Length: 299
Image 1 (tube, helix red, strand yellow):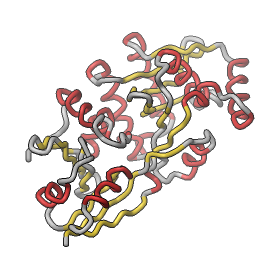
Image 2 (image 1 turned 90 degrees about the vertical axis):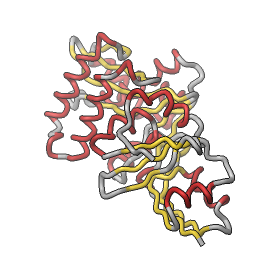
Image 3 (image 1 turned 45 degrees about the vertical axis):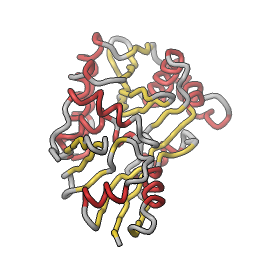
Image 4 (image 1 turned 180 degrees about the vertical axis):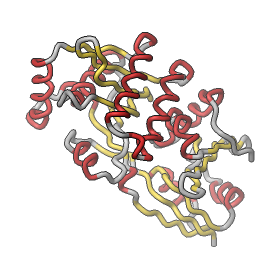
């Protein structure tokens, strides 16, 4: 198969196959696969015979990733053995696919599934985060209300008129937060710039920003996916203490108003970062999209 860099021209076809997946995790969203691809060494190949996309990365050695397409099928023993051989190790496998493989490979292979907590994506009731109502969100609601009291701010949807300002804010944010000293932040910055510079060529993107006075002080980039919205990137000025809480609430509130079909906000994984995990847990997730490592040895 022809493994190659994923291109913007493949966006719609890839998206159709991502939508076929029984569990649509952010790691396999087109904006993530494409924007991080150059830094992660991501390659894809379309398998026309089986109507699947195959992926691997070279960020830390060669890592095979889960295939993207229709997972509910009974020919996985033949497909996997033909593609990988007798022994396979695959990273970032969505839990639903791991369960399908365990079932369909019974009698053909030994399947070992290893939990990877740092890759679990956090799911929230979008209406709860959009309103912050109830006692459990009292502290966050108070911080947002204090921000409203202290600052004259507006929320603006991310559009052509805002793109240059968002790019400038991202550059400033990176300088202040010493992105150059952190490989992960450098890769993320590259990905954000790729997305912002190609905003109209990537399907289903959405976003918003907080303006205080005349300056952008926070922004969010997300993606619509049926009844779910995936929050890919969110940055805020540290000069304003509650700016992260404000952009989170305002963005989701405006998206719910525009898209009443939305029910779930996916705020992605914590990468085993203790501080990030505590922050994500404080918003009371209603569930997770779990990913794992899968080892398969054919009998």
